[in-house]
Image (cartoon, rainbow, N blue to C red; front, side, top):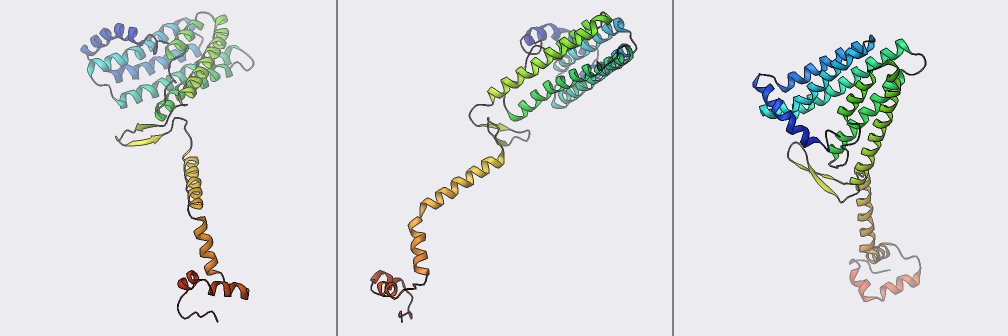
Length: 275
């Protein structure tokens, strides 16, 4: 939601802060790396049962993730490598945080509740994968939703307020994250039902992409079948006449009929008198 509907409003407020951090020598890569360190600290606090301090360290983790983009824009260093580094660190941070929650549940609860954070982590990774795959295929729709990364971190932090609130909070987080993943899939599916499009790869060359994302094998097979149908309908009579000329005539009446036909005699090789 913050990344989609309110993106412009967030950028207007974080832009001046990013410019100030850049003036003090802070780089976007430093913020991304220290955000991972903060996520590790949050996971350790949660795993050891210090949930209230974990809220403040989780907030610090979110601040690092919030301001690394504005700092990169202020420095003019936005690049594909920086975006890739930020995305990978975000996935690692999510795994670390849910690992800390799982450790805490193992220590304080019985049963299979440890699988709940792992399910949230799996659905969260699916949300990120849908967006990356849709961008790679050149289709839209796999963005936005109710539970993007910022919203997931806010709701997770709310569960750290009380030990009795954590498990219900995780169930709500799983449900809303699953709804976000389903919504992105449906929107991307509808965006894929369009005309064929051409997408430029990173080398600048254009490669063919079909909005319905059919396989290359199917396209090749259909083209081959169409070519075979066109070839069969082009000269059916010509092939039949060629076979008739080459095939030996078994009956005497057939040989006499060919000998009496001037067109057939003209097409026969010399030296063949029909005897």
